[in-house]
Amino acid sequence: EFIFNTPKHHRVHHARNAAYLRKNFAGMFIAWDRLLGTFVEEDPVNDPCVYYQAAQPATYNPLAEQVVHLGVVRREVAAQGSLPRML
Image (tube, rainbow, N blue to C red):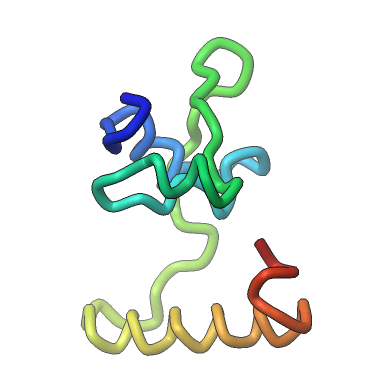
């Protein structure tokens, strides 16, 4: 659990709670999130995970959605000035 991603960590990644946004990106090794400061532990008692997309997708084509998402990320990074500053 300290090194590998678990269902508990993955729930946080998909939650839309303010404390959980942009956290736990790890696909397999949660240690990367711990090292880069993007790890947060789930708190099911005080802040249970709430799931759903804030904005509904314009299409259900998975390739198109990835392209749209990359554009959103690019704009967010540009607004911060740099990727390290955003993290």
